[in-house]
Length: 68
Image (cartoon, rainbow, N blue to C red):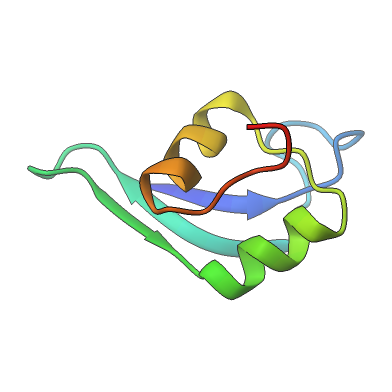
């Protein structure tokens, strides 16, 4: 299971996070994706740039990242 987090891009990959907004488990069938949509939209509206993987998960959940 993987956490979907908001982090400062200057922090190390496994460093401090600002907020956990969801989780992803690719080992279930189908894959489990749980996202706090309100918090995800909040961060996107405030300039958060999701990784390619997280952007794909957000699209799957119907949450459009800016520029997608």
